[in-house]
Amino acid sequence: MLLKKIILCGFLALGLTACVEPPPSEMKVIQVTDYDFSHNDNHAVTVYFGHTGGDHYTVTLLRDEIKEGVFIESSAKNAPNLVFDASWAGEYYVQSAKHDTHSSLKILELNSEAKVAKFEVAARLVNPKQKNDYISLEKTTITVQGQQFDNLTKSF
Image (cartoon, rainbow, N blue to C red; front, top):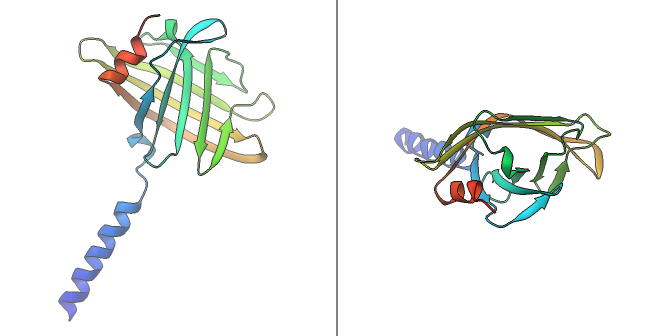
């Protein structure tokens, strides 16, 4: 009887840990846009990243700024070359000039031979419908690779 309880507890623990969201450091790139669009009259690209199940962040930056070592920081939406937002738990979050919001992006690596790019991202965004509802993303590294890397570095 004791052995059955131990085995049952083991399966329950395994089942519960399988339902836990991965930590921010394990966020995956969902998609990188592969079409031409403009932001502030410049070619731009959007990277969607997050967890499986629909919760995700998006970051849009200018294509000519995709270079290793580039660092872009926006406080209260003061950097027009960086757009950060999120769709999380059915709510939408944005940067705001009227609220304590910020975002940053640093390109840590851009390796054309290996088709790998690594970004360090962070953000604090506000729900425009509920002014005291914020979502925060602590510094997280995301990796763009393979076809998504080609989409990221595509020239138009």
